[in-house]
Image 1: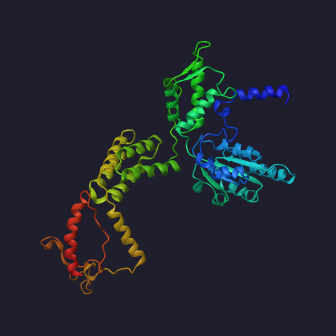
Image 2: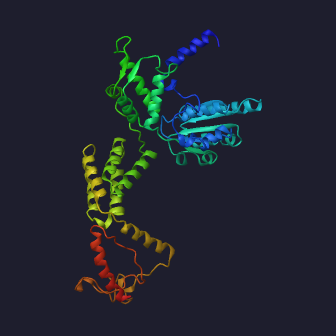
Image 3: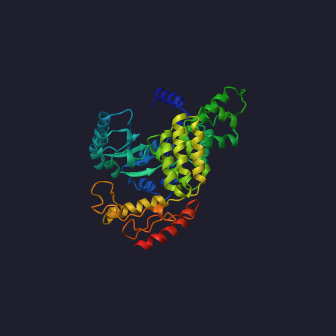
Length: 443
C-alpha cells in the first residue's frame, strides 16, 4: 500500500462513526450471543470445523448480525460479498452469484454472500438464489429482524440453519462501552475520559440491548462534552450527560410484525396470570409503539369471555364498554380506560369453563353422530306443526316452582360446562348441582 493509499484509508477510517470503528474483527472480540458462539455451541462448531452452510440470522438491530457475517467470512477464508434487500435487485444478485461461480471455477476462494434484511426480497428474488445456495456456489448468510418462518421463502428456510440473536445484556453493553473508551486505535483510548459507573449503568439500560445505539450515544456524549471541557482536563461522563445525549427514544415496534404478536401474547398471558403490573407494562409498550387501539379492545373483549368468563360476569360488559369508550374519545385519553380494563381483568377471578365447554361441544359435533332436535323442542308455531308432533309435550319452565322443568333437552347424557369454584361461578356451580340432579330424572 502506497503512502497516499495509506493516508486515504486513515482519513476514511477517521470519518467513520464510533460504532463502525469498533466492529469486532474476530470471534474473540465478538461480544454477546453465547448461546450461539459459546464453547460447544452449534454455530461455533460449524465455524471451527469449516462446515458452515447457509444460515439465517434473526434478531433485533444492533446485536451483531452483520458483524458476525464479516467475521465468519474471515474465519472460513471466504470472500465476503454484501447486498441489501432494500437497495439491490435481481440484477445485482445475479452478478454476485456469477462472480462467485467464476471464482470457484478458476480455483479461487468460495464466497460468503451476506444479504441484509433478506425478508424484503420478494419471492422471485429469493427463488433466484435457491439453485446456487443448494449447489454450494455461495454460502448464504441472511439477516432479518422479522421471523424468517413467516417472512422468508419456505424453500430458502428449509436449506438454511436458523440462528436467533438476543439483545445484549447490560453487562455485555458495558463491556462494549468500556472497550470503546479504552481502545487507543479505534476508540477513545487517547482521550482522558472519566466515565462514572452510574452513567454507564444508565446507558446500558436505556439502549435496549443494541450495541450500535449504545456506542452512538457514547460518541455524542464524548464529543459534545469534549467541546466544553478545558484543555488537558478529563472528559467527565455523568448520567445527566448521557441523558442529555439521547433524543426521544424510538420504541422498536412493528404493528404488523413479530413485536405486535409477541407483545399481544405477553399482554394476554400477563392478564390471564393475574399480574396487573405486567399487564400495564405490555399495554404501555404497545401504546408507545403505535398499536391500533381497536386491536387492543378486541383482545380484551375476547379475554373477558375466554379467561374470566362467569367467574366475574362484569368483565365482559366492562370490556365492551371500554371498546365503545375508546372509539368515542381516542388517544391519549382512552389509555385511561384501557388501563382500568386491563387492571380489572387482571385482578378478576379467572375461569375458562365457558371456553372449554364450547370446545368440547364442537368436538363432539365434529367427531360423533349429529343429534336430532327432540320433537318437543322443535318449532311448532306454524300450521301443521302440532300434527308433526313438534313442540308437543314441552314443559314451560316458568310454571315450575323452582323454574326448572324435568325434561331431557339433549337426548344423551353429556356434560360440557364444569364451573370452577372461584368468584361468582362458585354460586353457579352450587346451583348447577341441583339443576342437574333434577334433569337426570328425565333421562
